[in-house]
Image (cartoon, rainbow, N blue to C red; front, side):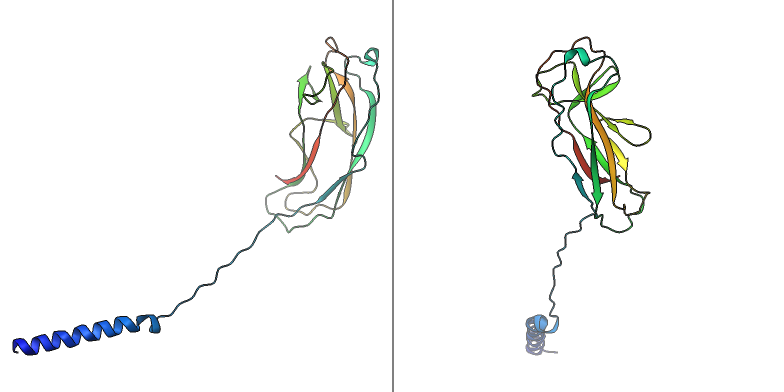
Length: 182
């Protein structure tokens, strides 16, 4: 084969490759679709029957070790729960709030409190009158089940640890009830 024939063949082959390369977008067209979704866990509506629990004035002389003064009851209503079966998770209400442990009891109190040596003690008013501390979780249903509408009863009052260092003044506490899967 002569050099001229080889060049013509190479030129034709190069033209063929360039032509095929230019046709590639026409032959291998692609498009994409993007998806977006927000997956939210099931939840429940939580409502307290009282948004403020005024315990009134408590005389320092009413405070004795282990006693609860000015106790009042309130109810947390759990309703309208949604979501599907969630395998290994337990629906619950988590209870949190600032405070401190005094003589083995958790006393809810904010830093704005003027009174010292005292706080608000919280009990779940079920059969056991269980003391509730910050970070506790109360199960609402069995693992993987959607909770049914229900009322959780609580009682709260003023208490002190050993009651040896009580200083009178304003006492405030904030307790948060939050639905959660654990």
